[in-house]
Image (cartoon, rainbow, N blue to C red):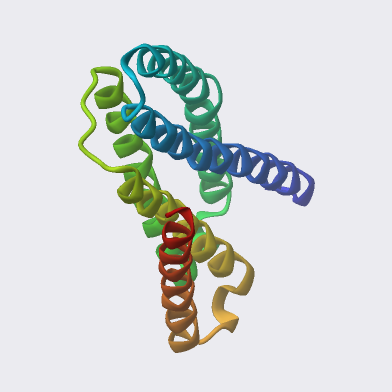
Length: 180
């Protein structure tokens, strides 16, 4: 694969990664608002729920899922354009593991959306806030793996990853207390 093709694929991959993450971050915010709307009086709850169902559906099927498909497509194109390099890199194996976990996250979000549409609210808004941070952790891990590749020690990388996770948990607790 020539360098110009690789750069084009990489640019498209990054554009759709950004779009995919924007959708993943926003869909869970909508789930939080949709869940919190259930505490409103019946008339307001019905109006809000109907609107959230429309917003969730459009975000999911017009932005998030197409962006996920294109992210994976351009990523695979790059991966199989130079398999001897990418498959020999330990950081790529770890990145691909995070990508698989992110795909699982994507489809769990789709299941949550389906349940909310049916009026099934299994998760509380605080649980959804925690769920929203899973995508953030995946993003941090993937970006650091790609940018640092083999130059970062595994110990520092692991400690940094858990440091970000702990920081996010503390931030959520502080936010929860400030809302009271």
